[in-house]
Image 1 (tube, rainbow, N blue to C red):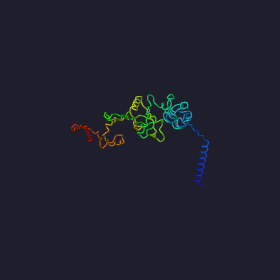
Image 2: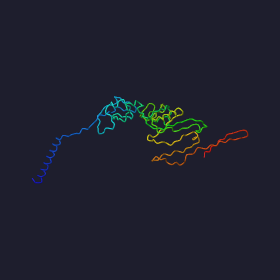
Image 3: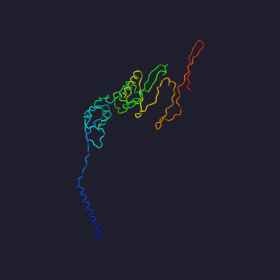
Length: 286
């Protein structure tokens, strides 16, 4: 047998013994697993909508990994039961302190009203028909007030003004949460409840009793004050308005080709023909 052959055989024997020794060590090694630390947390068993008072049947306690525990999570059912839900909670989700009202805050709608604010209800189906029933709890609206006047006063017979801006809708009828289809039947609407300050509540009450309140829907992120002025019948009787340009990507209004026409000027002329008097009105439409 040659030296080369002997060397290859010895190498094979050494490799085989090494592999066998490695497998023996691997089998004898005891793997130590690190147990993840958990903490008891109150978890919702069902979906908890806004305004609902939590009961014992709505909650269970589960062990939750401590390293991914949300801030403000409550540990026991006693900390949760008999409290109203301010922010909806999904089934299987830990119940957080920030999503519940205080126990002494009451139940239902009253528990959702922040301190110093008021809930004011407009009892008229027409308040929602202006936006075809697309106003939902949580939306923001402008409140418009329409008042009737005399044809010979400065309004020309009536006016509409933006009474309040960017007001949050707390409820539509008895619904505190938006329906699944994200639309309310405008024919069935009886009331809309708004979250306002005490002063704003007084304005709404006066407006509702003396005129007609309607709503104009806003983008939820639009909280800016709009520069508006009251519209009167005298202003719009002969008014013609050009199309409004769409805003550009940076939010600025695009230039328009034509300027809005000014209100037409009216001239009243008294005519005399012998003993007969007449009246002639000339409208300058420019």
